[in-house]
Image (tube, rainbow, N blue to C red):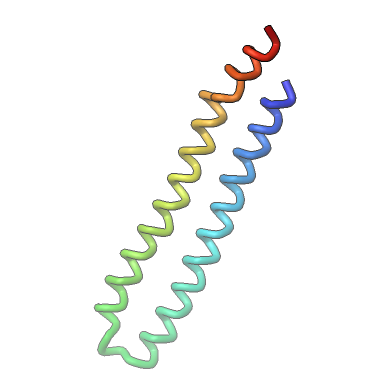
Length: 87
């Protein structure tokens, strides 16, 4: 049953580190957007479009990580191997 606890720990790490990475990435990108918009206000519309595209990609990577973590937490492929070893 140690496998279940390790899977829960791994799922928590995947979700937690993914959230931290996504937040840091979006924060850095937002600060750079504000810096560049302040320097060249005429490019603000073009930069805003690119920023929102990248925000969606960063969030998509995090959501994929959450999906994989929940998949391992609910349909754990390691438990089947563990049952075969125990027989």
